[in-house]
Image (tube, rainbow, N blue to C red; front, top):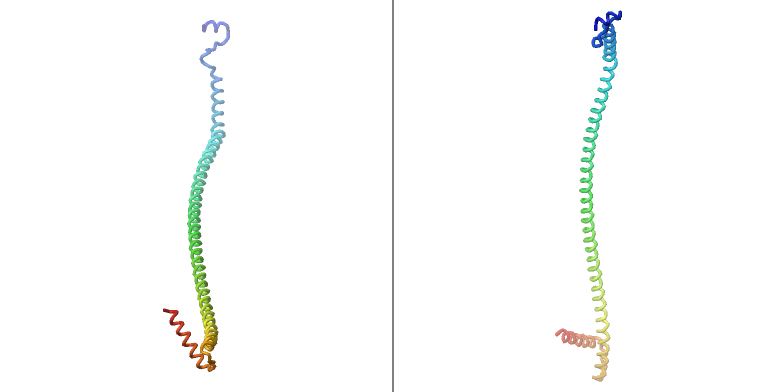
Length: 179
């Protein structure tokens, strides 16, 4: 085969082995491409990847910090709520105690007022009874003297004697009424 190619005057080329000029040009082009990629593209890609990693890690850290802060605030709110419930229960108990104290005060004042009114009524009743007893004694005495005068037939004009007789009569009636 080599002979046939040489006879034709053309240089024969092996299809498996490339031409050495193409290998040189391809190698130089590959070296330039590698240089450009390593000098400009790969550092930019690394910066982009690092920025993305930093953003993701920073986002995770911020999320963790926000979660920790949210948990802390939740605990604070729970503590405040518990404190508010405790305060509300204390206020409610104090109000009940105050209401019971006021109720007891009102009842005590009502009892005092009732006792005062009853005592005043008893005093007034005793004074009226004493007045009525005096009036009745005088009237009974006059009636008794008049009746005795009609029965005896003589006039009991002497006041001292009449008064002593009436008092004795009424004392006798009182002692008879108490038996």
